[in-house]
Length: 330
Ligand code: HEM
Image (cartoon, rainbow, N blue to C red; front, side):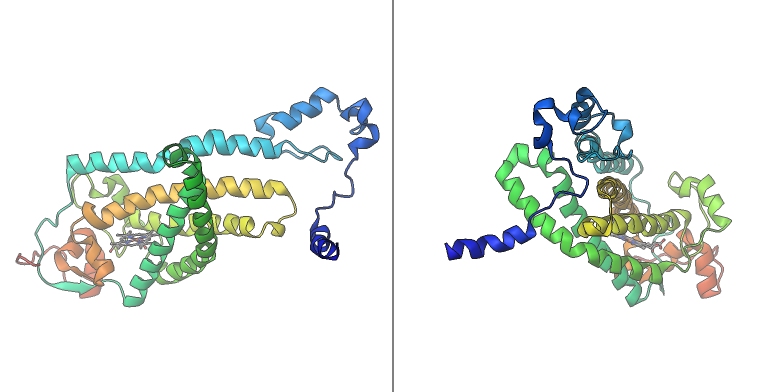
């Protein structure tokens, strides 16, 4: 008996108390809920509980109403829109890139490799980049399992398997979430210089980045890279803020901030994942010589002249138009 009391005491202490304005339906249950909620009709109350109007997703709950419909509406947005359609975005991007690769192939260095290299990124900048890339990939994979496991994994591998996987993914996601904030600040400090938009970027836009032919001038970073940088920073801030709200829900005083956070978090994260796939394509198989900058910290001179001619002239003091002799480099 004593043991039972000792066991029950902490549970009782943690029990969720109803808010001050909560209505005890037992008092007038024989008259239906309208008795408890003033002049709102029964139909209106039950209609609200069941679903209500999705357009009122974040509208304020009527004063004195204990239960709101926003939970149900949030579920509808999450199940019917986000879970059903958002997951297709990365798949579409991969499909488009595959088609682009088949038609266009990799962007080769026109003059071939010169065999001479110039430094592009310091070791600390590269570590900041790979640290962010690693954390982003872990969070992206675990996040996608949490969001889409029920529709993508469970039907094929079973509910139990999905549930174990999703629990593990949730632990990993919660652990690496705060690390992402640190990685983001570090990436910003290391790469912000050179990522401010300039007039020369307009030419890059008009020539569609040279992806369909033609030469485009650029300083250290071209318009595509600058846009990617700011997407990572701004999207990263959105994901970080909404993630922190979900990790520490008591930071907000209204459950609707929490619901809004889950939706914005998923939109921001899947949007960034889709663009990251494009970035990874250009950084690897899409453009010859690109990955050298992030692996070795230096790039071939001909690559620099072709893709970042103004930066090449700035760094070397030489003209970017005079071609170097081509030799086969490993
Ligand atoms: C495994 C995947 C990845 C590869 C292979 C890769 C490759 C590269 C390469 C080669 C560059 C240098 C481009 C140049 O020299 O101009 C670069 C730059 C950069 N990457 Fe990645 N990357 C990857 C993942 C990521 C991820 C996940 C993020 C962020 C979420 C990211 C953010 C950046 C940023 C911000 C820059 C600098 C571009 C700028 O400041 O404009 N990368 N990456």
